[in-house]
Image (cartoon, rainbow, N blue to C red; front, side, top):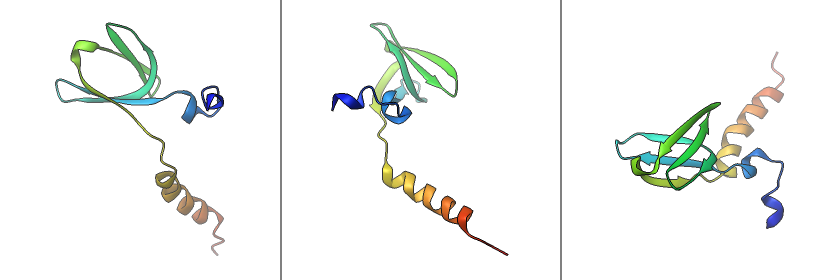
Amino acid sequence: MNFLVFSPLPILSNPEFKVKKLDGTNVQGKLVSKNEKAISLKQYGRLQKIPKEDISSIKKRKFSLIKTSVVAIPIIAFGLYDYK
């Protein structure tokens, strides 16, 4: 299992988290750093630093092969379709 930690795949190398804040907003992004006072997430090239006292809950997002294939297979099939 240790080989997954150093995998070149971006899906496996940087875990993605969903943070629910006390004011009801959700922040989703890849973990950059964490310490005793704050957690930093990168979302669309933007770095967001969230203080720990503002966090209600944190969930790690899972990669779903089924959801990915439901979207990717029709797109690939449509691209390969030879329409005249």
